[in-house]
Picture 1 (cartoon, rainbow, N blue to C red):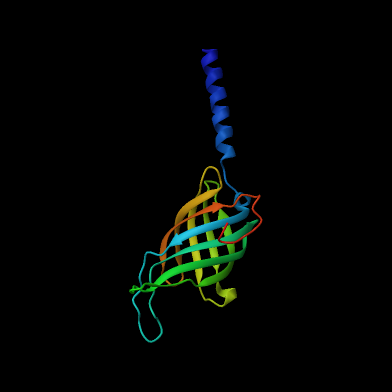
Picture 2 (cartoon, rainbow, N blue to C red; picture 1 turned 45 degrees about the vertical axis):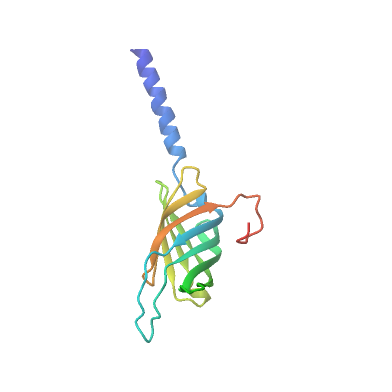
Length: 165
C-alpha cells in the first residue's frame, strides 16, 4: 500500500510540475513573428463612400517585446479584377499593437494601423502551441472583415526581417 501511495504521489508531483511549466505568459510571445491570415468576407460596395472589399490573403511581420507590438508590416494580396488576365494588388500597411496572454496560452493580439494613416484595428484571438513558437486562431477588423490566422516565431538567429526569408 505504501508503494502505491508513494508511486501515486510521485506521479501527481511530476504531472503538476509538467502542467505548471506549460502555463503561458506575455514573455512567451517575445520575438519576431510572421503571421498569415485570410479574409473570408466579401463586403458589397455601397456607393459613393464604400468601394466594397474582395477576399484577400495577408502576411504580417511584427516584433513583440513585453506585450508591445512594434515594427509591424502587413503585405496583403487581393484580386481587384478577375481578368483575363487577373489583376492583383499588394497594399502594404504598418502597425503597432499589444499582446495579452492567459495562463491557458490563449492570447489576444491587437494590430493598430491608425498611427500610420489607416483607420483600422485588427483583433486576433489565437492559441499559442505547446512549443510556444506557433499560433492559430481567428481575426477580425474594425471594417467587418474576418478569417483564420496562424503564425510562427522566427528563429533567433535570423536578424534580417523581410518577406523573402
